[in-house]
Image (cartoon, rainbow, N blue to C red; front, side):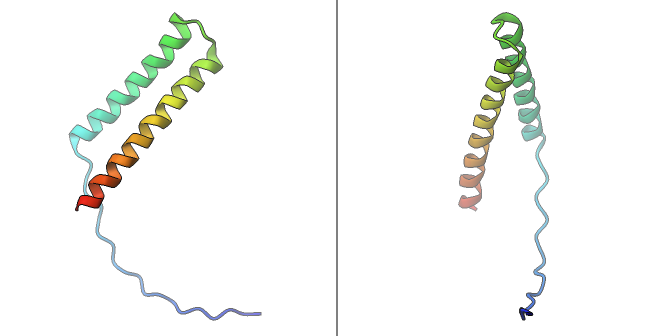
Amino acid sequence: MTLDQDMMAETPRRPAPPVSAGTMVAYVAAGVLLFGWFLFGLLVQRQGLVDSVGETAGTAFGLLLVVAVVGTFRRDRR
């Protein structure tokens, strides 16, 4: 059995704008803070490796969610 499909022509895509230096600094700062949060939980609170990784991963996913929502609102304004 064959399926006939109409081939869509490739539409040229606009190149993505470059990432600003401020955004890169914010990403690096977030990474350093997350690593510090991991070390704080592991060494200061002595909550164990798995708990520290889980808490840090949860915080990172929360930050990613905030970045995604803000990016969506910013893209919608344009």
